[in-house]
Length: 441
Image (cartoon, rainbow, N blue to C red; front, side):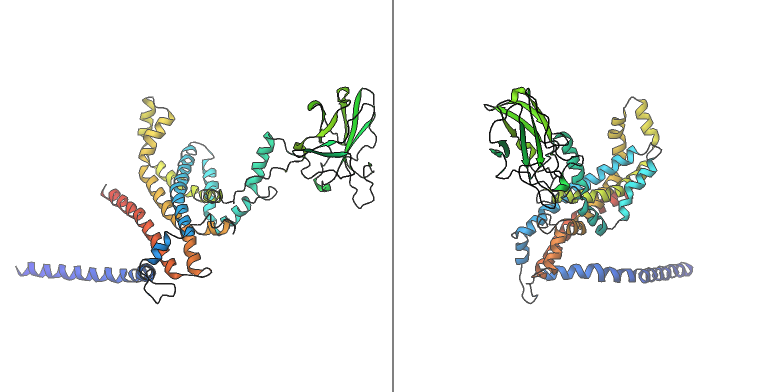
């Protein structure tokens, strides 16, 4: 009996020492957690109920402002778009990359390239994509590609700002076109001078205009040229030696409103029309002069949020791919082979076997990215120009602007912080439930 009591006391003392030791090890972490997490959360909640100066109790006024202020409502809407779109797209791309690169020899190199953006800071990525989305196709990669594709299928204008002078034998024909003041005749030289084209924008293979194309009685010949001499000294309506032909200019011969012949100016500006053009008016169609296609306004009000989400996906698709690839490596291969033996094709194996088995990993990636996008700030702040920043606004950016911007109001800023916390809590709760469920298994 005495021995039993002694053993019990020993165990009690041992358990007590273990508790003290555990508390000693946990205390620094708990202090840091309290100082860096618990106290700021508590203070933010308290501060959200006070006015701008922090002296007077404002009740729920700051929270009412969250749902009445237009910029904050825009931030809430954009956050919803971010949470719905960005994690889903990044996870889907990560899944596709992980599955498709599993069987190729260069899969490791591909994964390395896709994962590399994760090594870049949000600041650097924002600067990169600010340049990618530049409106000028000569600087912005996105518009350079888009304009290239567009010009492949749609003919580009060669002389968007070209126009005649009042002394030239051309007049406006409506709709941006020009036409000769009088009909042309076979055996005569039709002269079509224009100005308004910068020398640097002239076709690279344009040659000095031919002052006198050969004339015949069975054709209408002419010359179209840039009636401008660099350095001055040229004469209007006269082909001077240094003036270039308007290569590629399209000319139409029109009789009674019907086009009877067409021609295109050569490198020296000369052109020839058949005898059917005799007595016709020469028209320069508006397609010669319309403004060149300048691409898409990626950072405009309507596309700025999708454009920034694209930069986020570029960064985080590699993160999703690596985690999913790790889960894919642990799948039981016998199940996949059994499905193939039973006659399932690769799509069926992917949809009915691979994806269900990867569901826990996909859940981890999706929840992680959802929490991450709720805090997105850097990309929006850097990529969105000042004119479109209100349209791309998100809660984290609005929190910064309300708390530290012009006419800062820490009461509203604290309310936004609490709202962000409320958005994060359900996602965290789902993640904790999933982790507990995995632990019980």
